[in-house]
Image 1 (spheres, rainbow, N blue to C red):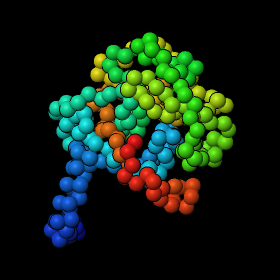
Image 2: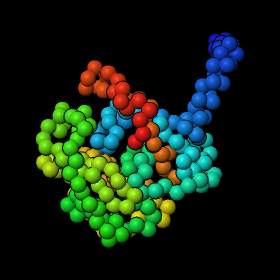
Image 3: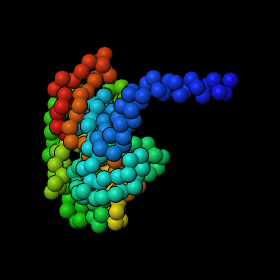
Image 4: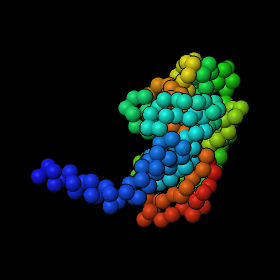
Length: 232
């Protein structure tokens, strides 16, 4: 029986050799060069939405040994404001957040206001594009405020939720060498470096610059046509 099973496996592999080679190279490409990632939560609203499928450039910062976190060559340094994917140091789950601080930065937050190296970010109220760019009501029915956060290269919109319990103040803390601080743009609804700690460079799996497409799960999974191939 064991011989028959072994023969059947070899025959199956031989009959589907082309397909198996294709699958192998697809997995290799996703591991080492480019990947795509489904945004599973509202932690990056209003900039990344649930249902967004994002394109991730795995070679933006480092060339790695395929299927590992071993860095073979550093290409460029991650910068403040980049949206990145990374492996959570807490549980190994892949996350997508905004890189807020680089090695050597001294960071603190005072009642939602970010301070980096002694300079406080400015916050300008913004009218949300539409309800689809706010945390879904099924998840959070209370007031949401949108601001443009500005501090040097950090220029993006954030959401705060006044009625929700969250870590709104911390630090100051210094980012260690070889590590980075990540925060979600949906500040009061994100499990990020405030809770899971700093992220080592080798755990960063790529940079997100563009969407592939987006499906709205709250509207019968209809496509958000305006988000097809959109920059983030």
